[in-house]
Image (cartoon, helix red, strand yellow):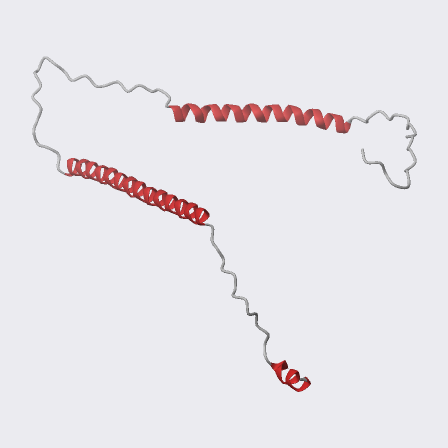
Length: 157
């Protein structure tokens, strides 16, 4: 019997019991599929909306280009037709109003605020420089009382 045991030492020991199968949670798998499908649909909708937006932008650019072409064509080849003006009426030139646009107003307001901030800072800097130049009054040194450090285990507060 000792002879048979020494001969079997080179073989690998295997289990006789069949391996336990890994059972997957079907509800978790279904939820994962549903989430994946939702994200896929959302991506597809986003791609579709992006394509629609690009199409709208392209149409707007085309319209602008056509308008520019019409304007350029009008400048290059103006019409020869002369307007019929009765001698008693003189065309009135439109008076251009000079009003501030929102952008102009905001620009002016930001400049004014910047200048006000600079003046304020300058006064503040003057005050700080005056404090530095003026000698500070020397106060008598008061000895500080320091409590001795405790040794040992500290209580948890």
